[in-house]
Structures are given as C-alpha cells and as structure tokens.
Amino acid sequence: MAITALPPDADADIARVTEALAMITPRWNVRILLALSGPPLRYSELAAKVSWLQNGQLHPKLKSLCDAGLVERTEHTARHVTYGHTERATALLPVLPMIVTWAEEHLEKTDRPLPAIEQIEDSLTLLTRRHAAAILWVLKSRTEVSGRALARIVMPSSDWTNIYPPLRQLVDDGLVDTEGMGRPYRLSAAGDALGPVLGTLSAWAAGQPLDQAARHPVWGQPQAKSAPRPWVSSPSRPAPAALPPARAVGASPAWHHRDLFSHAAAGRPTAALPTAALPAGGPRR
Image (cartoon, rainbow, N blue to C red):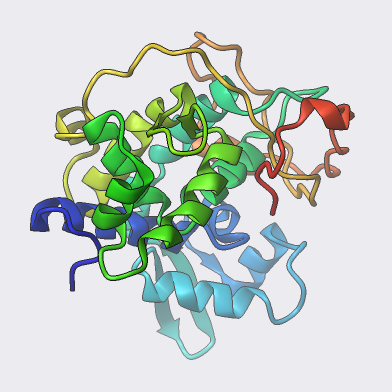
C-alpha cells in the first residue's frame, strides 16, 4: 500500500528506509547490536554486557531484533543457546560511524565531546520523527516546496494542514528551514548533509552493497552549500559504555564499532548551556 503520492519506486524506497530506522531506533537496540558484534553470546553473557537493562527487559528486545532479522538465535542443545548477528546486521554496522560523523558536524557542541553511542541515538531519534523520511526525501528532490504541496505528496489521504506539526518539528530540530509562515520549506545544511546516511540506509534496506548509496537518485546528489545551523542533542541519560572521544571535523574516524563497548563508565552530565542559546522545541527523548 502506498504511503505517499510519489511514484511507486520512490514510495517503496521511503517505506524501506522508514522500516529500517524503526528496527534500530528503539531504546537500547543499537547498544545490544554492538554488544553482539563479536562471537555469539549466551544469554547470561550478553546480559552481563548490557547490565544496565533491568530484569525482563533484555528478552523482549532480543525477540524483536530476531523478528527483524538482525539477531540470530541458535539452539545448540536445550541448555546451550547463543545469540549473534545475522548477515543483515553485520552489513548494517558500517552505517553507524557515518551517523557519528554527521552528528559531530551538526549536533550542538556540549562542554565535552559526547560518546559516539549517544551521538548515534540522538541522531536516530530525529530521523524517526513521524513522516520525517518522506518529508526529507521530497525536499531533497524538489529543493523548495510549499506546505500545501508537501502535504499532497507526503500524506495524500489526510487533511493537508496535518503536515504542519511534523514540519514544525523538523524545523525545530534544525533539519528543515523556512523564512516564515506561508513561505516554502527546504532542507537546512544539516538536513542536506544526511544524504550519505539516508542513501546508505536505502541501499542496505534494499539488500544492495552500501557503496550503491552514492548512486541513489536523490540522496546521492551533491550537498547544497548553506550556512550550518546547530541544534540540541538529547538530555543526559545512562551511558553504560565508555567510547573514544568524538573526532574533530575533517579527521578520519579513529574508532570501529567494536570500540563502542570497550569498558564501563559513568553517564555524562547535562550540558551547561544557557536556555536562550537553545532553539525552542529542540530534540528531546
């Protein structure tokens, strides 16, 4: 069933990316996938790696990841069961450093570098806003679009005014720009820079090699040159793994997904920024 008024191939692309994001964005999913990035683990071994999860939380998470085709449960004997990555999950992991690279460039800078895992979680939260994938796709492909025209494309079976809540959220998040009420909408520098991330997710969701992202008909196009607009990351929350410091913009990534669970550490403090410096309605979790 079509979710937009775009041609079938574009509609299917947006649906696949939306589904891929829905698999990995729920709380703790990325951390569980990273904990499983080595050899398969027994349930007790995995539970020790994600010890911040309360009793009863890990099992449903594992079941949902198994149902999504990202984790494989292998029953060696009745008493010996292990969990490990599927090939699909292994193919997905290279997307995570790309998300960190984008976050380091466009997320608000705090008093100290954010752990890479939190950069990933903050970024995924923005991308799974309702209708976000479709809105960003249309704005990337058509440069500037009015709210009414965008509604006809993104939610053709709904009242056109329903486009404004998700649009306002994306503007507050810093991914979409507009010059005011009644003016057209366009991608911000941060939204446009998501091209490699969304193109790679599209390739992965379609079962293609990740290097096909550069050939994506929309997300493979060169980035627009406009002034960057930083926005706020989510508030402090438990950080059960210590990660390498975020790299400086322009430097080559110095970490791999296996580094994300190197050793335990305390959570980060909330950034001490004046309220006036934060855009209203910034991303919150």
